[in-house]
Image (tube, one colour):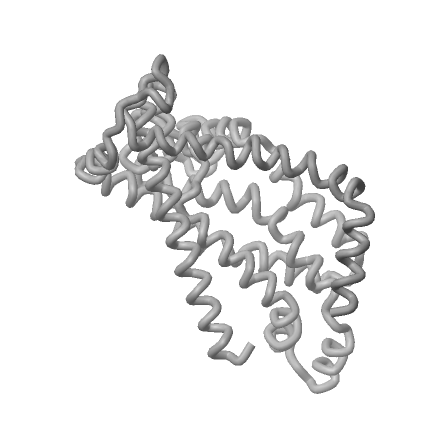
Length: 300
């Protein structure tokens, strides 16, 4: 209690300093995060840019009813969920495995070279990556030459999800492993030495020493990624789209982009985007509750 009072007294005496350092961040947050939230009203209006948000006619939930009753609703929702869920299931363990493997390399020089190699794809822009994919998978590209075929994989809806997820893992897994690698560097070496002296195998050392050291990071990352299941960026999906793979590549973010910016249906696209965000929040709450109950059940 005494410590809290002295801290409050210090803040009151130096409020100018606190204001100087916090005001820029606070203003940026308000301007770019909170004020734009007013645009959500467009989802409930028949928005007219000439009349503005406050002058447009109010239509309530009409755009949501229109979207939910659309014959394409389930297709776009399913495509989005499949890309996200499969990407999470296949992509989430890879950075953890990479970090565990890197941690076992005792030669620091070799370890740094491997880290540089696996981190590099993260710095390739999405558009450049998509261009590389089109070149590699074209009928005359390296993949077809290796297979001795002339298949245009980018026109196959059944191949789109595998291409999207695999390229995402290749690009981001190395960079995502940094957090786990940093956590492993703080693991107790005494526990590792004790496990070795007790005759633990390599897999037993990883299971009983390494994984418990990074478990809190794994849980936090899983909650964040599972809560963003519906937050696929439209850039990569849109850049990889062709007229023939649209049955699998058209997801909610690309649908919103086309409706809002290409067709000018601002109200309907805002309603679809808001629906997407609401589903995200619900998923985040559910996953957080499940993980919390699981940890409580383990006595953590």
